[in-house]
Image 1 (spheres, rainbow, N blue to C red):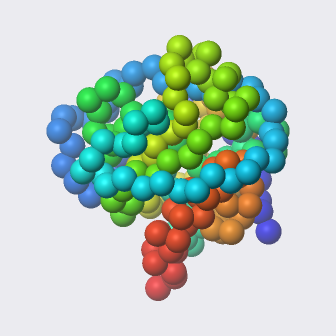
Image 2: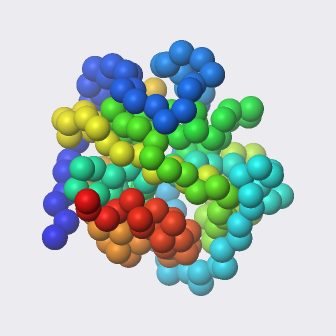
Length: 220
């Protein structure tokens, strides 16, 4: 059973004190975030799922794809954080966001998690060592590229598994107050629920992410 949680969209005081790191940061936290371009409202349609493409993390992502990070946040019960988009009714997703020019993907993942959920009490447990891509459906591609002034055919994502180490009251869908909220409700879900509630064009990537991180979803 999925329990929905709503968060006030009025920003609450956020104190960015990420408690643990699985790697050294190249500069002190907090990081001053750069503006992140968000999705525009688009209708939710059932699309033909495109095949997955992979690229080593040591290489640049495939040409024509926007660099992006995805965050799979799990709690002490190994349930996964997912939230409903404000701009696409019925669509749920894990946090994600663009990588700034020259930004390390790990740093981008920490920044996006904080900006979208307010969460700073978390540690990186694992990462997928290659880029995964998905193509935008035609109407999504047209809207986003018009907004961005680009011609991306999709996104190349680097996925990270975070373990939440704080209390649930820390979760704030207003984020850290630097960006416009993207989510309306959130819930802890099973891997199956996360995939099933995602928009169709993201489901192949979500399924592969769940498969890769599955050893970490097992309770001790």
